[in-house]
Image (tube, rainbow, N blue to C red; front, side):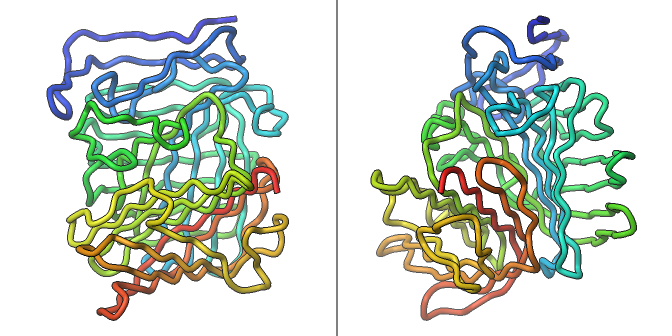
Length: 368
């Protein structure tokens, strides 16, 4: 088997804090590798959006995730560029390099696909990275300062074609700290690494899937990056992120059965962070509509939306958000099922002015 290759180029490019990174290329071979991986655990150890694991074995994983949605949340595109053993995700693919593609159309229908690649090549420059999933017809290009990202799709056998441009309007961060704090722990999401390169941004998308099209300007966008040894021991995972009025938010609630919950919340207003916490009591995400239950008893029925509550303490106050899914989601055979929606967001401070916007919601049923 070929080892994971690292090709360096002389001359460093300045990044956050005192970081200065030499451009390099990382080539991920198609077969799972033997041995234990080493992980980047803080921002001072490698470029913010660069490769975070030294090799991909039978359990280790890494992905770069992007989404773009229309201003009204009635259409959108998302992609997970993966380097992971497919068997660990319940998939039969001939390679560790693959990507998940989601398309959601104005008519309420959706299309999901898993597309294999021959290998993955990650080119790091500054704090940014670009990725080519060789042989898949797809990849992403990121600016060295994380200000802009472009996704390209040309997958003839799936009839997927198009381009998505994302421009950041917010500062990169980890789960609870800004990226400028380069010594902060990046692997604090139940042992999984998380670097959010674009918590919020503007997007332009022109993508076709067969005879259906997704096309919009001045939409919303998001990009993050995860890595680790195995997925956390969660049974169910809800993740919601979006923008409304002056607010930017993201939240996770994972049900662990008798062991309780994992929760995460981030909320900012006019660019000022008022909540950044992994405490269980700061956020609640509950599905609503279509007979949805919590905890769920299976992957059906699909909810019509989610209600989120945030508690930012005595100084920050309490907030309620209602997320309404647009249309239905196909179910990808990841674990028990993976569903994704774009939609509308309405909410604000309880008793205060209310706003509207758009966002993304996700449901990963790992074991229920």
